[in-house]
Image (cartoon, rainbow, N blue to C red; front, side, top):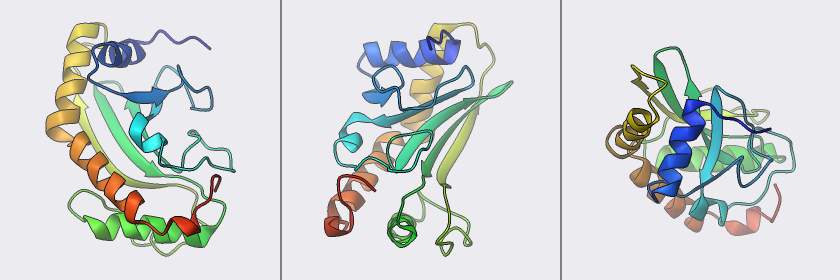
Length: 173
């Protein structure tokens, strides 16, 4: 499926300008894709995460996605379905307790062994012109850097994953 939405075009522009090093549906068709959502993962995180056994909108247990709404753009970071519910809960709790200023989850999600996906960070920005790709890519870049703190979030996630007991996680989970 070839998508040509302004959201996808703006993200592609950021990728081409080396402002965003990610894997999304253009590189891996296991990522969900439509005109309103764009699922992705930073390339360096993908190299340190196992693939999911269960089908989800991402092939990885942690993923980002943009959601286009009428006048807003939301960016959401989720922990998805992991086959072993205990491993999922341990990872989720490790992320949230590591930095409660960057990550949060509903308390019920932190104890539900049967959970499938949990939002751990989400923010939105106003978008006034969905047709102007230059404006949109600049807004997204500014949003990632200044509001969402994308680089800081990814650094913390990487630290957590590197220090997580890797014997609990194989090549697929």
